[in-house]
Structures are given as structure tokens and as C-alpha cells.
Length: 173
Image 1 (cartoon, rainbow, N blue to C red):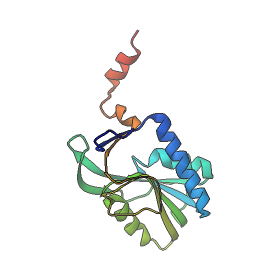
Image 2: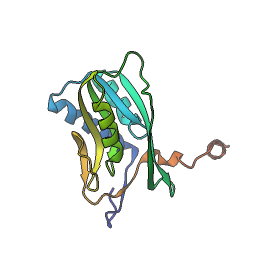
Image 3: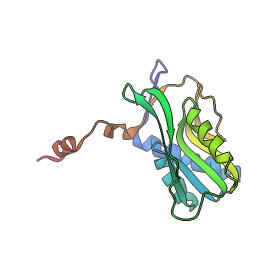
Image 4: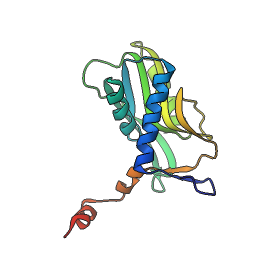
């Protein structure tokens, strides 16, 4: 649900899963066939997992991080993992790069630029749930365009400040 001021978007678990399913349908409708999925951790892990299952394709994971200051709301230096984790072989062929959103576009562009230098990758396309108006990178697939670039409150954020003692209180009798 987008707030009246257009600055915040609140997403429930049901909406989140429906958006991932719409992403899968959009990719399938394009007719593009790919060999592997590479998701960006952490935001792309859930969409990547679902797409890997729906399309029955292997899932690789690359860790990236750029949100550090002000409870993750201020973008800092981009850190990109040196290695990509995957069950076997190397990232090769036609690769679908998946993340949750294109915010500034800095992370996606940096990863795409790095991967385009990989000779084993014959084609690379990217997919996100949300494309913000402020993004300097245009992914190949997106589910929702957000011209006002609101802050997206995703359902799993409830775990960001939850620690084991908080979980223990939740289940205390």
C-alpha cells in the first residue's frame, strides 16, 4: 500500500509473493529462455529462490551490500563479493540476474558491468520487482514502476531488529 504522500510503500507477505509470481509470468511471457539464475543477496534471494523453482533452473548467489547508515536508509559504498556461490560449474550461458529492486541502480549496473566481462556468459538479462524513478539503471524486466521512488517497507523487515530474546518473548507461555 502506497502512503498518501507517495514516500512509503508498505508490502504484505501476500502482496510480496504475488509480485514475485507476476515477475515469473512476465519473464515467461517474454519468451526468453535462460540457463541459470543469479540472485543478489540479500534482497534478491527470495525472488531468486521462487524463480529457480518455477523455471526449474539452478540458482547462484552473489552477495552485495550498500545500505549501511541510518538503519539502512543511506546508501554507502558498494561491496560486491569476489566469488559467486553455486551448486556446480561456473556461471555461464544465458543468465537471469535477479534482485528485489532497482533503487539508485548503482548495484545492478555494477554487477551487470562485472558480469558482462565474463566470457562464459553469452547473454545477461536482469529482473526486479520494483523499479524506482530515481534508478539510473533500467532492468530488462520489472513488475512495478515507482516514479516517486518511495521507501519500500518489505514484509521481512520485521526481522531486522528482532533478536533471539525477542523471539523467545514471542513464544513464551
